[in-house]
Amino acid sequence: MDNELIKIISAGTPIFHEGAPGDCAYIIQSGEVEVSMLINGSNVAFAVLEKGELFGEMALIDNSFRSATAIARTDVELLAISRDYIEQKIELSDPTVRMLLQVVLERYRDVHARLHDVSESLREHESTTATSTIGSFFNQYLKLSSKLASAITSRHAHSNPSDKVVADLASTSNSIIKEINLKNALDNNEFELFYQPIVNIPEGTIAGCEALIRWNSPTLGFTPPDEFIGLAEKTGLIIPIGQWITAEACRAASEFRKHRDIYMSINLSTRQFESDSFMNDIENAAKAAGLNSDCIKLEITESILMSNPELAESCLNKLKAAGFSIAIDDFGTGYSSFSYLHRFPIDTLKIDRSFVNAMFSNERSKEIVRTLSLLAKNLNMKTIAEGIEEKNESQQLDTFGCDYGQGYRYSKPVPKDQFLALLKHKSLPAT
Image (cartoon, rainbow, N blue to C red; front, top):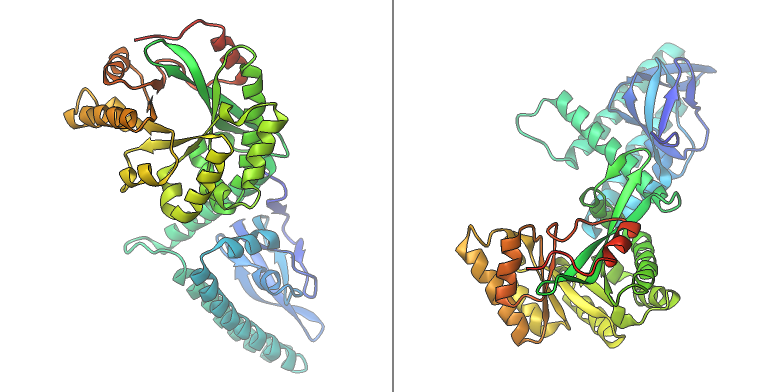
């Protein structure tokens, strides 16, 4: 586990001192932490925190000095949460959430300021009285903290509170660890692109390939895309990751095209569309690899079109004008798929695997595939059927006039050297 995230502190060791600058907060993974204040020259303990509790957050949020001292009462394991991490989360949150958070923090700070004022006024009094009063105020402070945490997390009606603490701790810890490891993955060269052939169905020849990212983290092990792409989208990390994918895929396409005249298909995300560098990133990557834009097919999902149709239309028209091809992925699974066909400059429909795999068990699925193939042909578009696994599926698709296929019948996604080996074959399994 990343040493910057997890801190192992021995019993009796200070975690931070009152008056020190605050650069991170901590969640207790195991053990106990004692919190104290300096009163009449002595550190007086007024709280003992246990597993699942957060501390050190106010100095982080307020960018101020520590108002108390924290010492490991037993051997403890702490998950560190940096200021940058919190600021990023706040910046990326929904505007309504940011507004509510601002109001909550102002009230939270007010309680904290009153606690500080009380402790200052009591410094000249006897230690016993001061300790009792400060302890009372601090307990109110902790209760408010707990209530605020409860207000912004979901509750299950019959869940045990202790079970919820454990679940929240595990979820938060996993999210933070995975996100920071994901942020470091590019610098550490932990990503790799695999390539899955896109095959001309009647001929069985490779017409193109789709670039698919894989992450082999030394900390988390092999992590499938569906477990980190969503996180990359949510955090904005998809922008630099997308830039790397585009550049790497274009370099690979240049190498592949020395053996066969094929195209490279690259997936795009909503966040990439929103990036100011979006067009330059794609054009520069193709240019650096010595590729013409017509060698690149850019795949988008219906969610991109639905989230911001105006922006999508503008970006897609620019891409089309620059010579790139546009494919819509998982076509037919959205709510307004057919409305896209006249509005956006789409060249290719990728028929979702759910329809392809159900053709022989569900007559409606078969009819959907047949209709989409015919529709695409009438609109002068190409079709790619996804998830082809069996010979009878490719035969049926050929009967319907589907142009291209992709799936395990031809090949699973493979590393670059294995894909180069596939290119040496005259054909993959034909109908």
